[in-house]
Image 1 (tube, rainbow, N blue to C red):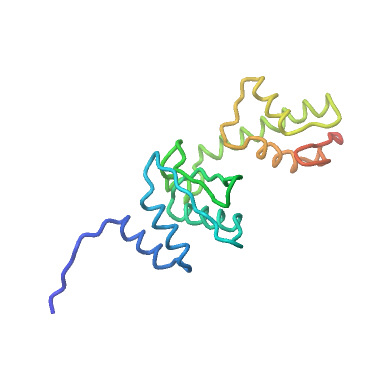
Image 2 (image 1 turned 30 degrees about the horizontal axis):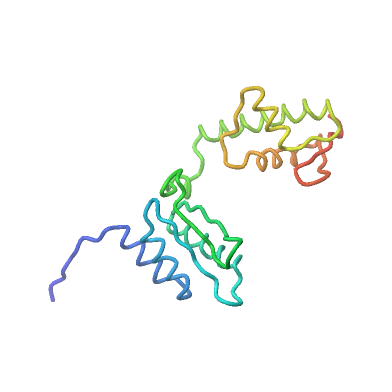
Length: 179
């Protein structure tokens, strides 16, 4: 029996794999919606009676991550639905962002950011008893250093939490306890 070979688009193979591994009909339906989503489109998933909107949003986020789509997801406060669209900053996350270890250049830049944050936190901590992560971000901005990330306050908090010179007093607030 002769074999027949056919060219297959790698995206088609990936999509089929995701659909086959979907555990629920809802997940399969979400994948189908995501595969058909075009730039500029906005869609909504409506929760059934008794269905948890937070769980629905989480399921959408998981499916978007697996399809490597960068979505903007917003729960609608007026109704039991989750509205989403492709994030305008990019249609898909690059495979490098999702799967690979940081390059040497990324590591150097990351270490430099941590050093700037430590330096600013110590400077502010010596000047006032309690500092916030946002004050450190503002202090860095005043020095012409922009933290090029989506949530700079979270990064600042993470660095300060690991510094022996500070203790956490509240969310994103730290007390300088000495050098």
